[in-house]
Length: 298
Image (cartoon, rainbow, N blue to C red; front, side, top):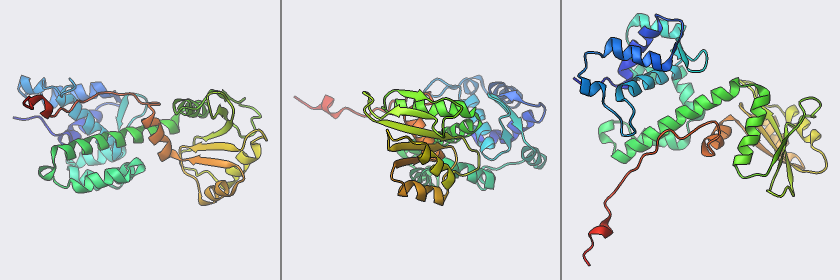
């Protein structure tokens, strides 16, 4: 007997979700384990990863995450999971092979949301696991986790209160090494959400504008209003959005007399991931190699 692969938990996860309106992720994993895998030997049930996590629970949770990527399940609120109509249709078929999920249009769109060219290159090289070196597998695994974290981070940003989103941006810029920031009044701010010091002494100021959009693109008009709201004491601005900028907006920012930096949703989550804003370190792995100097003869 052996532990199920994460993709072998797809149907068990959907079957449990089909019996409840919604459930906490951890409770879901425990129910799947107890109902479908209780006959496994105790040593397998208790098997741990190198970081101390239960392997079976971890694989079930990854199965849930992949189902979320394909929109077979959804997160109705923080920490909870719910089956979707798409998930119910798959459950009626009774089978969801990994290849079918990987070819699903929703899954592909999800992966492409924040997947970098580097990740694509790694995944193209690792066609079959038996052809992959241990380092290939590590790189692929880390890339997959990073992609999922960034995708979920972008989804969270699109859901939070717009005023809190503005504060998140200022916190990020502070983490990036800029000086103190000032949140502008929410009424009559003229399109300026915050003012940050470019340096620790406050010799130069930068104005910020944050737009928390789901699908709408930032338009040329938004950039024009932002430039117009910048007073004479600064010529620098940062415009951040969870979506993207249309071509006219990009053109307007490039042609402006002011220096305007545009940060779209993909760049935003890259920066937040890099500077640990809205994310935290879960596990640190150490990889060791032989110390050849230790064995050198004197």
